[in-house]
Image (cartoon, rainbow, N blue to C red; front, top):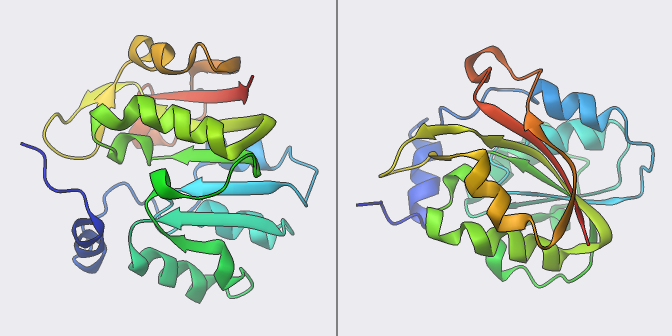
Length: 197
């Protein structure tokens, strides 16, 4: 049976240093993608961001509208300590599915959030993401293409499963095995670049 994946659960994971998904820096695939972006005023959301090295990287590169959402307070405090220039109003300690924004973001970044959700929430994840994205906005990032765990995060899955969740609502720009994953995840990740229809 899955644990209760609430705020307390995730805060305890951080306080007990139980966050094996945290690699201590931005992952190579996302860094390479971000380095191609030129509009520093675009609105970016990183949900379930954890310590949010991706947000720190973007802010340090001059992106001014980077928002971070996480259930837990501790990783948001960690980010603010490392990256004091990110506005506190951009740090959202909130349930992703309750975010009030509609058509606000140009880009939503996926990095280990999807695999932390209970599998029954996966269809809702893509629907909520569509709601938050502007017309033509993109969902970009990484999904595990591996079985992983069935009783606790991270939960695994396959490309065929994922495709059925988004095929009707997104244009597929990229949906393929990731060629530049970090070493422990090589051969186990998909890179996605999905555009809201």
